[in-house]
Image (tube, rainbow over all chains, first blue to last red; front, side):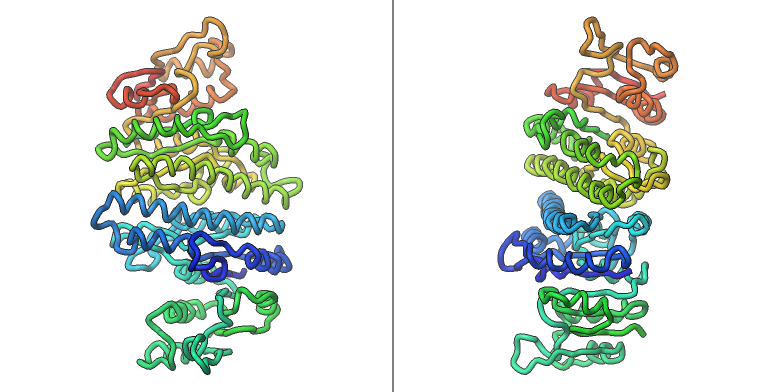
Length: 260
Length: 260
């Protein structure tokens, strides 16, 4: 079983509200279609320009504090926005003949201090068994500490990997993988392979070889470290056709972290 | 806590595909708004002209047999159609300032022989505790016997009532309640009260006083019999303004089945 994370910046343009990269998602679906049903898949997607503007506007990450009436409304609106993005993705996969099936993350996960502490996976397992491709997404979630919070797609991937032990976890990004410094900077070099010792070193060192370990990449590497207990992890460019196929054939078109 | 079932024929016109009775749902939301947050609510809605055409086209009730590829696609399409109806309802409630929150029935329930055999209610309980109004819906569902099946809104109501023991369960219909024969027939008389003995008698007698006990009303009465273990049950006209208010004030504008 393979878990593919569709990064928000791959499927959506974060600078344009409610934008959807239809052609990119179609290309992804076409590659998945070459391997399904011999291989089974779970997809998890990020919020892109559907989830984030709502989550920010209503300050969902603050929890159920302040104007709680407005917070509750915003919590629901954010979820509905995510369902709309999810619907667009499901539709593309169905068009390509793939039985993608929407599972509402907030209906099955609860979190505490930003981590999933409770997950209902029985139905997910049954969906896989019956030949479906479950599609989950970064979402609002009930939080045991703050009342409400945001659950990221990356956290879902990490939890599912721990529980379901896929052979590969593939993160689709809008860059070619993990770089030794911000890929927009001159001279940034793609790191082809990382072992867990190197990741630990990167995360612990203060200069971190130029990687911003407090940002999204740091979080991704922390999750990758957990996932690499059980699964090979790949960070690849989701906008480059053929990349998913390469990974599924055993090649490495981006950054690979082999399981321990 | 009150459970309200919004019948598919109340919120949608079953003869027109994807029709939504916006004004009826607005009126329902306005009545609920008079009692929230002092009273807490769970809403469950039917499929109307969103769910049923898809479920029929793909023969979901047959299970995962025959052309299973097409069945899986249809299973997902039916769920997505239900999410669209659910989104319209959520939007109306949010507009009225009510924190309705969508819970995907197929993400938390599994069924066998048409009955729910597995339900994940922890998140539902937390949503109630945090002041939300969870909104569930009749949906496709994983079935332990047939692989896939349809889970009706009425079954969800019955299961939730058993587990959560609401004070009242209100079924909104497009007629005034339960009649002694088909309400379209001449001389049909509204039954104001039914006790459980009378329901049992109706369901067991072959003529059933004109009620079609094999159809939807028979199923509703069977569910009502179970629910009346714990909760008062009302069948009322959901298109008549003020009816929900009347029930919540202790009156009976339709058919009442008092708890045992």
